[in-house]
Image (cartoon, rainbow, N blue to C red):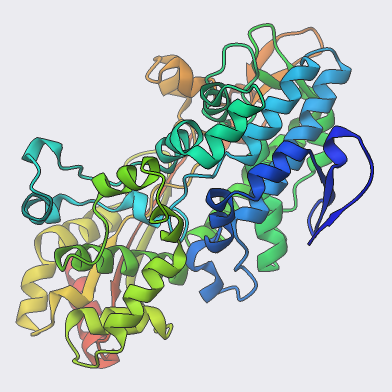
Length: 467
């Protein structure tokens, strides 16, 4: 809901009522950007992908999240301005960067970015007549697409230029690469995460993401080298944020059914690409910069319409079965899962299960006369407490195994005597102890296979693992 008000203040040109943060004021330029076709596309992208298949109210969009990040960035910027840490002119740029930080997202959130296209490379070469070296193995990241949109897509870039703002500067702020303006969008503790954790908790009905936003923002500082740091007295709030993210990953983002549907969709997209139904990676970048309406239609409905087409065929082939499962919410069954939480090597069960999937699953499915296209397995990316590695390994920090940019993303505390330390290195912090652990999981799913056959397959796996 947007209503015009008469207040002349720059950030009260229009007011949006948000269920998470309350009133969010907008400038004239921000309102104009929001009203562009490219930004309005965010209304048609679900923030949480297929999480609404498990949590019915989790169907909100990237549009509302982007407004929430704008609001929080403005609050952080005002705190910094009162402390003379940020110039007034930079607040405008920070707000615009926050507003546009998710502008390059794909349909259904992140799922297309994690598709490995090795198996369809020969098709892409034939279909697009490209040289083998030019065929991308993965879709470009949403960050890369966002940079192209901000700097190349006319409805956004022209508005910025007309208001004497360099689109490249806004893109640099979004990426956390601006030499003068602090990085508040690409960190373990940033305004993006502060909004989505609280907003996701609100929309799923779960309590885990309700972090103390006010206390964190009021205790932020900027170091001499332009890093965003947190006063050490707010350490517990930072720990709560990192723990909240861990619990939300387990309960929502990598929930067995949510992740199962996303893997099913990834598998379906690869099969559809072989039929010429899905855009190839090279085409995505072309759509972004060619300033046509094609990119505007690249939203959740783009995939939905393709799934609907194959779901309605009723010919019982693989694509029909997979697309019908997506359309009518027939979740893949979790056949078997192993999760490790360890400070050392993977458990014997994990190692054996992984070996079974790599070396024996195909032969077992053939023996049981199962269609291998209806069985798939995946390892969800490891759940992280911190930016560098799942449950940050202190020994790797000591060995300088990570680059400076990665280390710069860590939550940093400033002590009363002005010393800056990484939260994960603070021995008083629970994150210090959890940082020595590693969490990983591996899951096997099946779709359209009866319980009797699945139980037989499960018994076969258990025999292999126990031996």
